[in-house]
Length: 152
Image 1 (cartoon, rainbow, N blue to C red):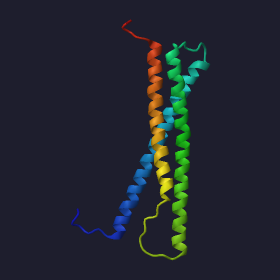
Image 2 (cartoon, rainbow, N blue to C red):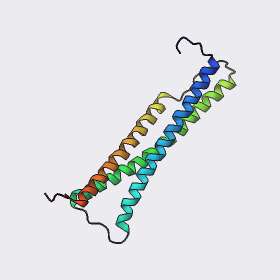
Image 3 (tube, rainbow, N blue to C red):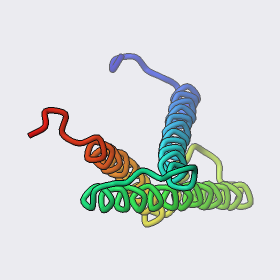
Image 4 (tube, rainbow, N blue to C red):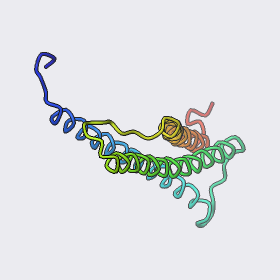
């Protein structure tokens, strides 16, 4: 493959296809993180508002609070992440418009400002970590509710 010459048009088409595929994967992952965070939070909070709420031991209650907080932070971070991606697309669109208005020809890779890209990475990864931490913490709270089956 390295020895083959690929035209600029083909290279740009492959780059665009890769960019679309990556964006699609990111969108899917964000939707899954939002679905899991919101779903688990709704189910566990719903248990406290329907019928007789479960009685948690004190350590489990603290875990549950931290889990809810983590999932709430995750949801907010996902929204900030999506807003960051919209702002990124606007920046790229403005650069593209400027290129067209200046009648610059040739291939250029148009990207958003680096601070915005870095912010998106940090916020997106933080949302993922908060989702994972919230899921684990709520699972630990559930295990504490069940208690030690060995009776030790």
